[in-house]
Length: 87
Image 1 (cartoon, rainbow, N blue to C red):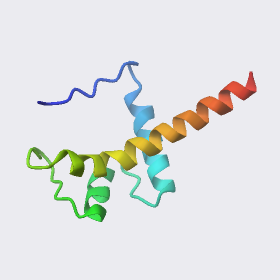
Image 2 (cartoon, one colour; image 1 turned 90 degrees about the vertical axis):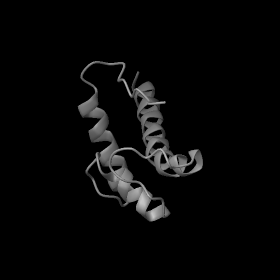
Image 3 (tube, helix red, strand yellow; image 1 turned 60 degrees about the vertical axis):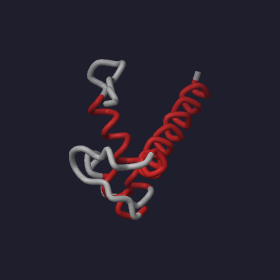
Image 4 (cartoon, rainbow, N blue to C red; image 1 turned 45 degrees about the vertical axis):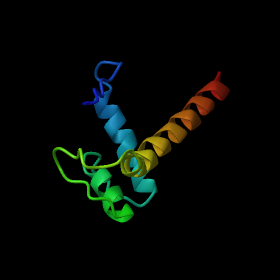
């Protein structure tokens, strides 16, 4: 089953990609947001390739997407907390 990574806020893709690039750069990864998942997969020893990856287990997919999304969420929470203290 294909996932639909629909962005709920129109026009937010660019800013989300910039956030991903900044966060992953701080973690020592390539700053290209479209390729950072391949860098994480390679580091984890997971055979991720461009195109269809139906052979991957849920565990493998989590090891690739978890560090990326998890670090982005941590940064967004930090940003929200800083924004709340300004008010």
